Each structure stands twice: as C-alpha cells, then as structure tokens.
Image (tube, rainbow, N blue to C red):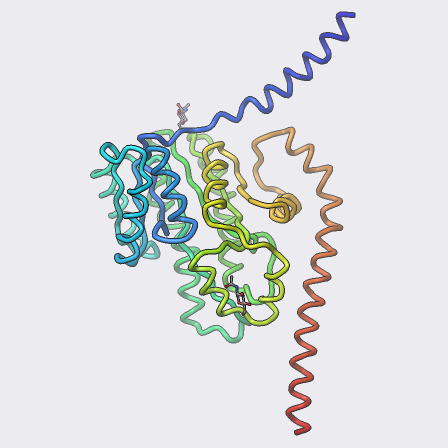
Length: 329
Ligand SMILES: *[C@@H]1O[C@H](CO)[C@@H](O)[C@H](O)[C@H]1NC(C)=O
Ligand SMILES: *[C@@H]1O[C@H](CO)[C@@H](O)[C@H](O)[C@H]1NC(C)=O
C-alpha cells in the first residue's frame, strides 16, 4: 500500500525539483543596456525592460533614431520618476569607444546588470557579388560589435559575481542558406562566442543566452529583403514572419530564466533542437527528451534540405533557360 503512495510522490517530487528550479531573475531597478536598442527587436526589448521598472540605456550609432526611440520607451516606463531611461551613440565595432562609454554610463546610471546585444544587419547575395567593404562592415557590426561590448563588460560582471548577457544569433547560426554566406558566417561565430563564454562565465554566476530568432518584421528585415536574390526570397517564404514584440518578449523571458537557447515558433524549436549537439544545457530532463527527439528531427531536416536544394535548382534552371533564349534571339 505504502509503496503505491511513495512512488507517485517521489515522481512528483522529482518533477517538482526539475520544473520548480526555474526561478526567474528580476530586472526591476537594475540597469539594462541594449545595444541596437533604437529599432526592431532591440527597441521592443527596451520597452519591455522599461515596463519592468528597469533603468534602460540604449546604444546605437544614429542619434536621431536613438532620441526618437527614447520617447517611445519613456512612454512605456513603469515609474518614470525613478527610472533612468537614456541613450548613448557608440560605434560598437570600435573597442576603445565601447569600453569608455560603458564605463561612463555605469558612473551616471549605475552598475550594468544585463547586457543585451541586438545590433546587426544582413545583406544577402551570392558571395562573389559582395564588395569587400560590405563583407568587412558585416563582420564589424555583427561579429566585432558582439565581441567588443562583452569583452568590455566581463571584468565588471566577474567582480560583482552577477550579470546576464543576451546575444542575438539567428536561425542561420544553425544552418547555411543560399544568399547568407557572409551574414551566416558571422552568426555561426556568435554561437561559438556564446558557447565559449557560457563556459568561462558560469563559475562567476553570470548567465549567457543565445537567441536564435527567425525572420522578424523589423526595419532591418525590410532592408535585408531588398537585397535577397530570388532563391533566398523563395526560401524565406517557407518560414513565418514574426513580430519584434513577440520575439523580444520570448528573448527576455528566456534570458531571465537563465536558459542558454532562446527561440520562438515551432520550426525554430525543431531546428534549434536538431542542431544542439555539444551546446550547454540547463535541465537534465530536457536533455533526455531531446536525445530521443533528435534522430527523428534529422529525417524532418533532410526533407527540408531537399526542398531547399530543389528551389535553388529550379531558379538555376530558370536562369540558364533565360540565357539560352537570349542567345537564340
Ligand atoms: C547570482 O546572481 C544573482 C542575481 O543575478 C544573485 O541574486 C545571487 O545572489 C548571485 N549568487 C551568488 C552565489 O553570488
Ligand atoms: C520581400 O520582398 C519580396 C519581393 O522581393 C516581396 O514579395 C515581399 O512581400 C517582401 N516581404 C517583406 C516582408 O517586405
């Protein structure tokens, strides 16, 4: 009799231990810095942080966009009288400039508790068509612009034995796609960065979260869309377009829960799970679940990859036929 009671209790207790651990960190009255906070996902995240009573500093290059965004963020502040909502114009691909400015805002606003990096932009196209300048500026903004602010903030986080770092990768951090050679290189690199610093910073009570958002309806996406070759447009059409508010909400929740990956939507969940490999994990229960799922996901992934290649081949044939017709005429 007793055994029948004990077993369910043990199971529930075990589940409770596993699920009950997800205590969320709180950013109220803490200083949150958002790089790339003047538009898109970064701006949505700044608004959410302001609603949670955090002190918010947004960083970007363009002062007009920054001051415009600040007005919106202030409107959403929970308690504007006691919150500091400000902006700084910084080029985060310049290390000295970044380090000095982060020091300065710590002095004026207070110690940084959470560093969010949403700065980035995409240019699509076949690799041979890129100008060397475009390649360099993609790497500067997307990759160095992620490494430098983190390098500058780590000594402070380590000293204080606390801190949250939220990095923005992409679904193309997980797999390459036609037209994304340079952008995807940067985003793969950001995954390597996130996994490495996760290991370096864990003993210091600093958490690292890597967000892998799918296509999101932002001003940046609109610009990116204009550079897409036909192949890339057709491939993108296979996925959904998400709203920046929803993506930002999910990213913030996952970062405050201390999760390593943050993704939104079913197909991003499937792709992220499939590609987890040697990535860090925060729940043993989840690892068991994933290890059962991954074999099956490889099959589903293969189905998608075959479709991707068919689309590319279709466009290729179309172009070749076009050339033939031109020659005939
Ligand atoms: C870890 O950081 C959290 C805040 O992020 C803090 O509440 C907690 O006390 C810290 N733990 C240790 C052991 O320093
Ligand atoms: C992206 O561009 C394609 C055409 O190149 C267009 O059909 C589509 O509506 C655009 N999507 C967005 C979200 O701007």
